[in-house]
Image 1 (cartoon, rainbow, N blue to C red):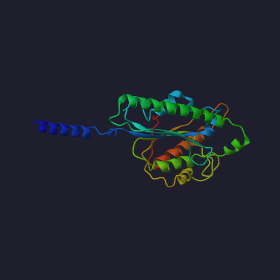
Image 2: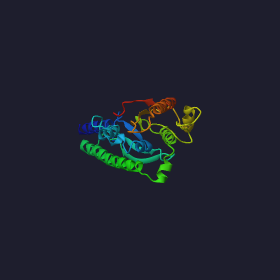
Image 3: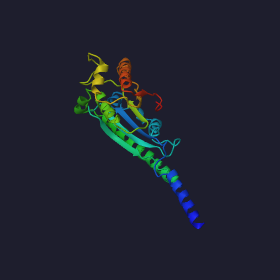
Length: 255
């Protein structure tokens, strides 16, 4: 009788272990968020950027870990700057691993708070740095900004994203999208802009299951009216993203 009870207890124990594995729950989501910030846009608007909005930043952070979502969720959040170089430039990146099913709830809550505090501090410092960079007036700085490289950095990221792990993927772009480089210039190039941008994105393996949102900042006081060019550029990028399988979602974060 005692032996039977031991066998029964062992069986129950095995079932409990199998039912409660150490990994995260199957419905836990790992989100990948990439944020691109156009430095020339900050310069043209007198050092103002939408990322100075604390509530907007919080909406971005919540894409990885929100208090209202599963505490087991995780993800990566990366900020890139564009326009100062033709290559992709990663400035800040933070990762939150998926929460193990058996992890103590208090420990997980601590990890979530730590993630938010760390990424907020690093991002706010980055915003200050970007505003400072956009406010420089040296000849070398001005010469660098005679061109605006947008396509190559974004396309470089999409090549990497096509090889990433499954999960919710978000691409957020703070830019007027006015390419002005050897790839194409909305200020004077001839030819088809869609073909030019698609050429920069050659090698991107689609379709990409990525939701994207473009936030074009309002023009600064006294600036030339480029609204029609901005609208044209946005339509071209929408067509390109559509061909690559990306889905526009204007509600990813609140503007």
